[in-house]
Image 1: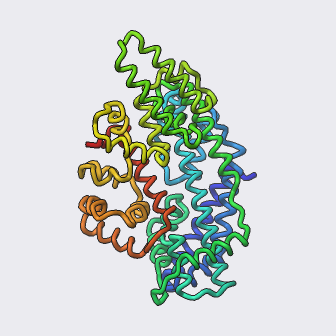
Image 2: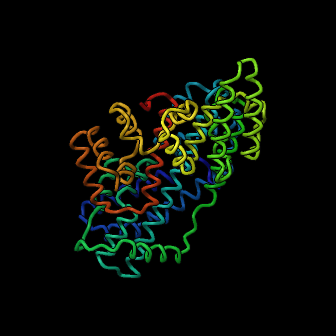
Length: 434
């Protein structure tokens, strides 16, 4: 296994070669097909996947996710040398002395985000390698290549490479311009071409790095134990963990259970509030299957309404229709009104005031906005565009036209990102639902 300094040197050399390759194809004014062939010839895709696997191997052997000095030093060194785009001076200046407050979960979040990011980059390399191979072996038409490129969203890959520090910002723009090229007659049969390409990709049997799942699981497990141990400092995270622990199909039942308890509690005198906290904890443990680390005593300290809001957010697929039905019944049920007030659905976007909409837009990637608002209603689009500059709105419209009709799965995933962003901003009280 390579040392951290060797791994950093390998990544630096690779980054230099990647940047030079992009500058070369740009000067030569290569087409998309010629560019991908040149990058393949230079080993950019295969070497990129190899380096990612080396990073995973190092991480599994050297990053032990425990709130101690060894983890602090190993994590900060790793972020500083490998995850270069992230600024770590704040951790260095604070030092290990503050680790027992917010630093452990903060470092875990940074590393979790990074490993999710390089897993995405590995998928990009895999797709580009397969795209190039498909071009050579199958000799597709320009129509077919353009359709596959649109379905893969190739134009957005350079941003992922740049966010990991593999290419410079200017070269990311150059590569995006090349990958956005179209040469077809305008005919489109995306679904057919997409099916054929992904069948070919499956036959190539390119292995995804299994280590990513192990590392992410280790981070999540360590964070969960720490959060439960320090529950009073992390109530929102604890409630989210409980929500995610609910088995499929249990979310609405749990909401109704909490709402029923809250209604009864509001009828009782405060002296017997402990009784409802106990019933709440008992019911939540039963419905979640008693996730590791949670005890009745810990759950009793959580707020019932906020827990219901969190469950509504993390299990939105199950609870969305239930919440909409409760909203149609009017405001006769104050408990359900209080629960709904703290949950942001994608359909709520147009109901926000402009200031709140702008806060969400600052947090969401342009790619996700483009995909999420494809097939959105005119009123939703109006709310989106009126909160942008005319130039930004034109670019979004061009991207929507370029993207065409993405699959429902992709639309759904992008809308989830907007919905999750809205719920996070609701929790921090940066936005509000009128």
